[in-house]
Image (cartoon, rainbow, N blue to C red):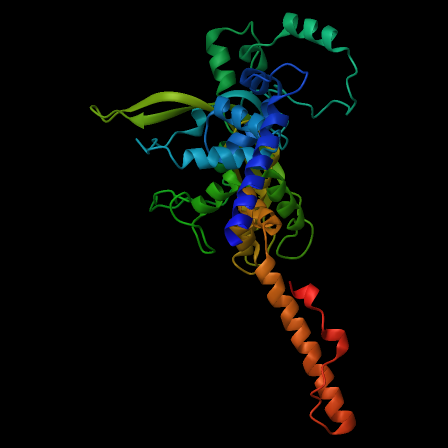
Length: 391
């Protein structure tokens, strides 16, 4: 009997999987190519890359298509695939000044070192649905497709000025030269914490927090930041963004023969530096502190939340559960996995809960009978004879 039930359950699972596959792969609309996703749904694919922790746009697009647009499920597919890959080499540290900027804004300073580059953004447009017919929009898009050069500095700039514009100076460096920022460098220069090999727990180094947030679910980070924008004095602290950057970053590894760093490719990243006005009792009120955020793809919400939470955890200094929340509650795969498991069979668990409830009611009824009649109360309560509930 148990075998038949198990066999029936397995057949049902396979049938459910087949329904998903057929619904995903069938339909009257044209088949979605991965190139369409990487070009037309770029921001969604970037989120899958970031939360999956693997720079592989085509693979992320394939996972996004397989997950029918579910970003967390697609990230789960990417991260599972990543766990099967061999680790061939470790990348070398890269100077973020080598970032080839496609977009760079400095909200804190009107005339920063280097230009402001708006790049691709919807920050200044109204939220109106575009009802342009598909054929008209497609025809216009084919004639107006921008190049990456057009996303960055002006196309008519000479080579020297173009290179300077794509690698502008930093507001942070100017503030540091004015001795206006707290120095948080670690002279020991420890190796970055590898969260893929050991879990990060409260008390972990800063690199563990930044790595955890880089893979975290974007909405979870934004929500956690929004809940914790109070400073140590319990007053609202609005952090000023120093820089928001998006661009291409080279990935160098040590050459196996020469030992010299060699760029083997490049990735797109978003980088944010957030400036906090220090005003706590035990803080240096004559300086600012700067939080940092860096993540795969074009995801400014995540990078901004990262930079803000980086400062918040540092200023909190373990007084609350903020660091624990950052390290242990922001991973979308962990959270959704725990939630999704609730849909699996819990027959035995729930039956034991029901039996405990019934036993407690029986004990209470027996106690009432003893109190009223002074007897043993051996007669069962007819209301408790509910075998159907315990099946």
